[in-house]
Image (cartoon, rainbow, N blue to C red; front, side, top):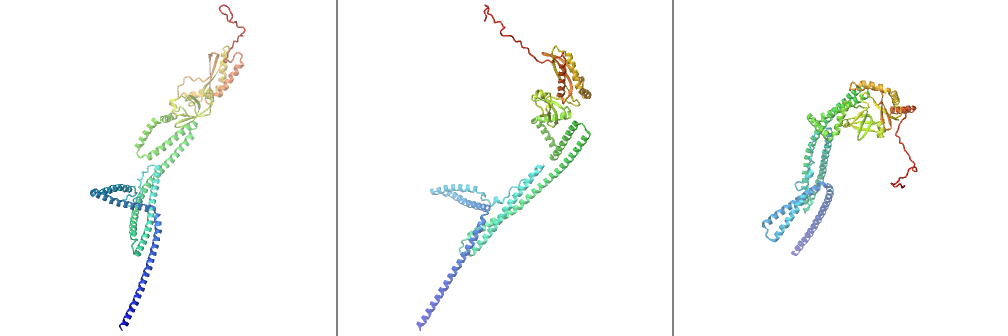
Length: 543
């Protein structure tokens, strides 16, 4: 009976042991399956993290700045530890090995300190360079139209800085979204990571995310303040620009009214002044007054204090008088010409300039120079052998050079003369009579005109000799008697009448038997060489 009971118990134990083994195997297999699934999930999460890290690495500016900051912190912590160790060794170090360690740490301290100096952020705060917006320039004071462009340029520049700052903020926002996704994945990994391998990475990423979120908050506040300051500057600049535009509008209206007034004045002058020369001079004066008025309007509008204008004009006058003496003298010369009336547009003048003589008609009298058209005159024929040039004569020549006016005021004629030589045995009285009659015949019209012009000229000048009839003179020269005939002719065409009278006198003299035109001659006495007697010596011998 006992044996049967023992067998039953043994059988029960064996059956229970088999069941227990089967259960253990099932548990092991289940655990292995769960671990495999967990590893597979972690690999999937790691793959997602790699993808996110690839996107994060594209934000190079922010990540490099953060890496620089972390490197700086790491170096600083090492440097602090080295400094403490150096301090300990200086106080407690006695052995040779400790002294060697001290020297090595001192060298390492210098290296780490130089590395910290080279880092951009220098460990003060993360992203300090990126978080700090560009400096806002002071709002310029717009006092003239040229400053308008400066103000507009400043507004565009500051807005460009603001847009760059906003773009950096948007980049940071996108980076924070990626970091949050990354931290969410690390949280999921933490739940299934029984070995806690990724816990340290999770903590680092959380710190990183907090720093970036703090930077984003800082940027948001800074952006708002920066934008408000820019708006204030833009409002001030636009206000100043509006003032300048309003001032320019007023000046433009004044200038248009001025142009209309002086145009009307020119129209009235043209209507009532028939003389071309007087009209030209009046037109010049009106134009000068118009330009002067416009310049004064501009000066008064853009110089706040009138005393500044007086000071500027005083210094300008002194500067012109010293550094630009010729220009200043030319302006004074222009005033003398315009208000003195010694030379007018259209007058024929002669100017001695740089050793040359120029004769021509005045085409224009500007603020700095006279413009002369060189005509064909006796000076051109006998001296220059050139004509038709445009000569520019500085107005200051009226003070320093000789200028002769051939047609001053109403006087449009000048004295001209021809001279011809007759032999000593010619009837020189008859020759003088012929020359006088021819000169009187061809210059009669100019003689009558000059008589009337001289009567008008008496009201301006004291004239004693007003004889306008042709004048004949005779002079003894080595090769004969010179007959000089002087007559009045047109100041603008002296050569024409001179040519006519010269040919007429020559033809008249050639018709007379007792008048012979003389010219330089030489007589040669030729002696035959053979007829000459050879020289004799004192003894009578022929040499």
